[in-house]
Image 1 (cartoon, rainbow, N blue to C red):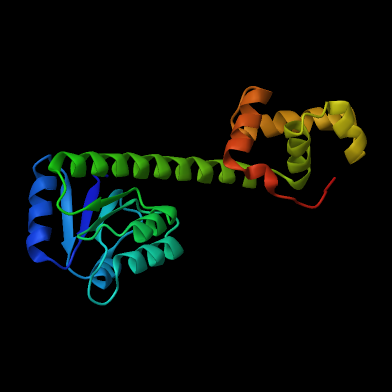
Image 2 (image 1 turned 180 degrees about the vertical axis):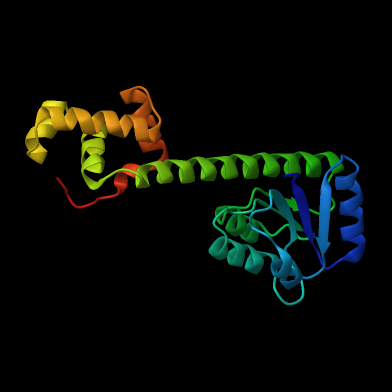
Length: 210
């Protein structure tokens, strides 16, 4: 899926200028002059980034940022553009996750570098989200007892310790362990531990089951 650079700015001349700069390097652009127009059509599944004016009639840039942060499972990287060097505002939107805060007028190359950075961040975020979803799907295929064995493995416990704690035989632990490795799609304990800790799937607690 090709990325889209969204531009939301109430200044039509600025919108046209930004579009020309972005399209000159082969990127797709969608433009809006009102924040609510963007919200009405935005697809969170679309890879891209948002170039957003701070002050606009109706919904402001920071207000749109807050709505996106509250609604989207994948946070769209935002580059704020402003005609005012408002430091407190810049700090606030950066803390809320903005990638950059550019003050007009800005250099074309600086803008393009910021856009490329935002697109890289979005790509990485979406890849990570996909990895998490895949890990969660694998985890969901485990039985409650396999989850307990998995949690023991991740905690660094030996099979005999897991056996004693769960009050099941050592052979049963070994069978569950082999099943866990197969279902999680790994061939070694370090690989299993990395998969679990990286994606946070071991935090789940399920009831015991023989």
